Length: 288
Image (cartoon, rainbow, N blue to C red; front, side, top):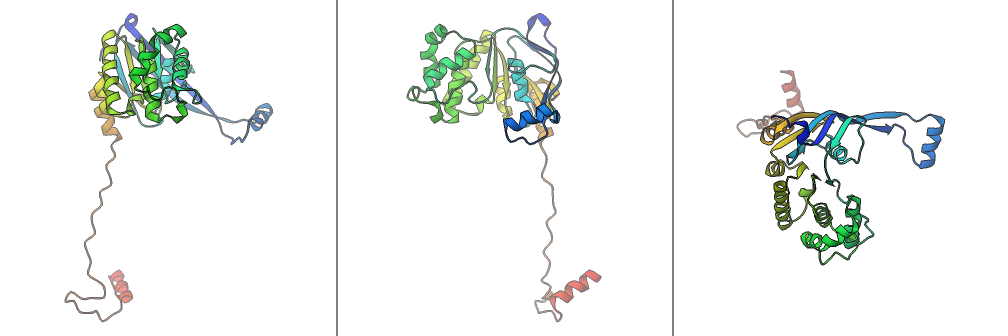
């Protein structure tokens, strides 16, 4: 697959790696942590969430990201969104980013849905007057009119996803990042999501879609990236990459031959009782 020219790029990750440092000791409190830190006894283990990722995504392109749990998909999304800074390498993203990463990110569960629209939109870089101008359409799109003045701690995961998607897509972004968002929600809402994403694509929005559902990636993306343990395994046409990924992930169940039924050790083939005890019959068979 031909790669876009630099001036047409929306996202460019140049040999990006990201390292997590995990303390090996089991620390039960902040006090214990600082005690170990001040004494210099903290021992860390390096965990590389991403390793040497080279990725170029053109403006208006839709790219899916697949991989097993722990592959680095969400880490990649956070790096693109600017939530995490790479340990090595360079990240460049052009335009306004609308990231919808983890379910409930940017929400205060004690606030109402209405209040959270302002909070979440402001965190995404929108101004208050912009939110005020669009809040009615955001609520209408979410379909949560009856619950919008209730604290979102009472919302289901599907309702939270609907509200988050409605806020993130309340304005046409330059780059839209969706991390497993389309895996929840009812059929009617997913249809509305599909229509909105289609409109965004026609408007030139760049889409990065992370999903475990390969059919969803095929529906929205012409290109796919496959990650495994932070390493890019493949990058190319979605159908080809997903076919390779599904074959690699498929582990056939072990085939075992069914044991043939054996005659009862206490009976002979004619149905009469054997003259010797079962324990002796087993011993004789073992000796043959």
